[in-house]
Length: 200
Image (cartoon, rainbow, N blue to C red; front, side, top):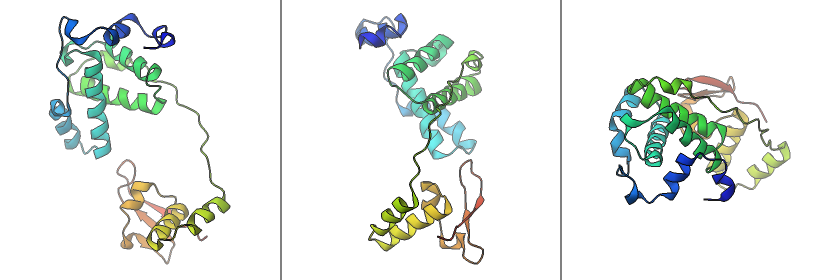
């Protein structure tokens, strides 16, 4: 572990990384996705998206492997150590930290009924300006695309402002050519919406 990182992390976190596994007094076997079938069932029964289910299981598994304890032994200090590890060592973005917090709160708060998780503070959001392509750059990308299907898909995504997953689920029946509307089914948050397909 880098010296500058050691100065930021608490001794408990440094010890976990430097102490050989066999020397720990209560070693816990490596956690896998199969250890969270109860979490998977609960998320699916509440109609969470596949991406959310996968993310929640990943962070809960990663957390237990990092902290090397059983779920019944977890404290708020363990969670803070893990979030500090994600922020400092992994250099995770605020959105990643928020997803990890959501995953841990759901499992330990909603399912295991531990109260301390609701005192965990969320990180401030990153304020980043998006890079926006100019009309000339977009036009150049479309012109350089030889495959007619790919070209049509790029034009629909750009003119309709679609996310990649929304474009992948698009069907011919979702296009209203008379009113220049695109019906987006099951968009973010499982909400349907109409997008205006701008004439270019």
